[in-house]
Image 1 (spheres, rainbow, N blue to C red):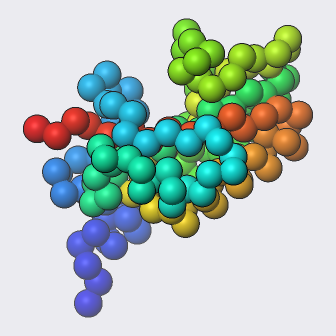
Image 2 (image 1 turned 135 degrees about the vertical axis):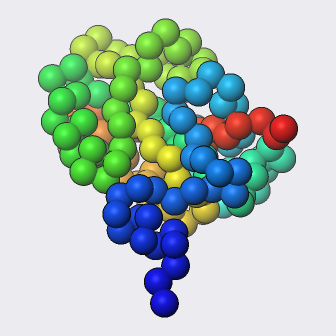
Length: 150
């Protein structure tokens, strides 16, 4: 027997979280619950040190990237294939972003909604680092955002 969530995923409708809906990456009420800007720190350690992260709920995983302006559209196309959205970091302060862009670099967020676990955070960090390197840029780190508890 196939479960309802599996059918929803197969049909491209997404899987509902325990609260009924997945977080919207544009929701201004989302709060950073985990941050990882030290490449030597394991994703499991970053998740373990966060008292605010709720493991059972999906989160917005947001990677901070610095890419050359000319590489942005190509990177966006590659990321969209796996449901990532690449967008400008806007007016994020360097302290909030994790680094200051060099001349010709654009500060970007690659983000998508998913359940977080150490294995997937680690895999996605490696993927973003590889993508940034191929584009001539840098992966700075990542944060996870969730809705505050009700």
